[in-house]
Image (cartoon, rainbow, N blue to C red; front, side, top):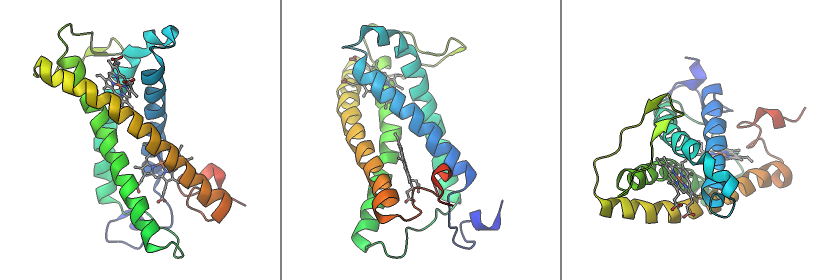
Amino acid sequence: MAAQDRPNGPVPDRYSRVAIWFHWTIALLVIFNIAVGLLHDPVPALRSLMGAHKALGITVLVLTAGRIAWRLAHRPPPLPIHTPMWEKALAHAAHAVLYVFMIALPLTGWLMVSGSAKRSPLNWFGLFDIPYLPVSVATGRLGHDAHGVLGWMMLALVVLHIGAALRHHVLLRDPVLERMAPVFRRR
Ligand code: HEM
Ligand code: HEM
């Protein structure tokens, strides 16, 4: 472990490679799942992707557990020194809610499918079965309702999150986006 990655070591000036890998892998899967989830009804061609939606959603749950463990053991870089306190608090709150959604969305989806009266297949790309949770039909319905509401809330928060990242890069011209997305590094 590099000295800068240790929780009590010196304050790092960028995210670690592992944190960056977790961020972009999960971001890609979540964006795919929001798009397929919201569009599979109006666009019938996307219905065949619902098996992947469920498998990738469970993958997000597993990856998020690993990501949170990594995050607790590795301190992230602080926001630029000029950032006002209210903005730091807002950024931390938004990130915490994103973590909650990364757990709550897969979990409510899993509850919905497990508690459905006519259970649809649940497996990881045909390689192995994912067990159903032992829940009632009423809990499944609750999961269904929550999944829909949380999906829209997550979409709104992700749009705000992307807007905030672009504001840092384009308007404030500070390194906040670069340290999570090194491809944007300015020479
Ligand atoms: C990152 C994880 C996930 C995200 C972001 C996500 C997002 C969404 C969204 C936005 C919808 C549309 C909701 C609506 O229009 O009411 C949806 C529908 C659905 N999701 Fe997920 N989902 C995730 C994980 C899961 C998991 C793990 C499962 C099951 C194991 C699942 C099963 C479903 C099903 C069956 C629907 C269709 C519900 C219906 O048409 O009534 N999702 N999802
Ligand atoms: C569904 C998609 C996404 C999710 C769930 C997500 C989630 C998160 C979370 C939880 C953090 C906090 C990391 C930490 O623990 O410190 C974070 C940081 C960050 N994200 Fe995302 N993200 C997504 C997409 C994006 C996109 C598309 C961009 C760029 C346009 C982006 C840019 C950033 C940046 C720059 C940071 C670092 C912020 C800082 O340094 O304080 N994210 N993201």
